[in-house]
Image (cartoon, rainbow, N blue to C red; front, side, top):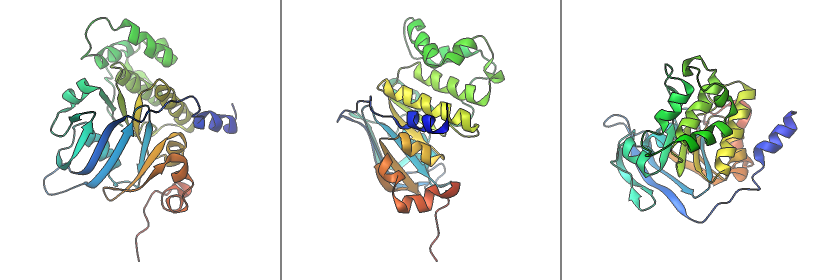
Length: 264
């Protein structure tokens, strides 16, 4: 497959359905890891049912912190995070998982000593009953995992580990999937594979929040995007509009330089 064909596949969004149902809304979030230091300083983010939303920005802008905050890993000082009719503020990750949100961190996202099959089983720890059917769906979506099902996760390649982490998160068939830098440290070919898999998952109806440093590819597949700077959402709009926005392009998309220009 040549690069132009690959890019066409990556950006084909024609078969997707997005409803007008707002499933998550984070409003004016102020949050941080330690007392007195606010990483998020009034951040906002919303996700509609079936939507793929990407969050980009320079290093230290707060994009990964926003993902972790939604998942209950960073304490919220003010603001609210509504998932349907529930306010997630103050809930821990285990409670949030049970409401239908899965999160895939950038690092330490598999159990290296366990097999691929056992890792998937661990992803279904809150499910009751037989998990064979949903596990077979994961193997169908990720054929490489089916081939490696008895292999220890610690022996997988970086791309295979990322696929396993995503597959494990999907074992709960979440309504919303949060992906934190899924293409980090992967080769260009594997990056393309991961982005195609993200689209495949989204095609099933799963809403996705995609936090990414690879801003161009992330915006190319996104329905909407948020550009963060200094803990706030500085730009927001349709993915294709942000991709073609001259100011966003100058500050965040130019030659891989994601450093916000400082005023004189």
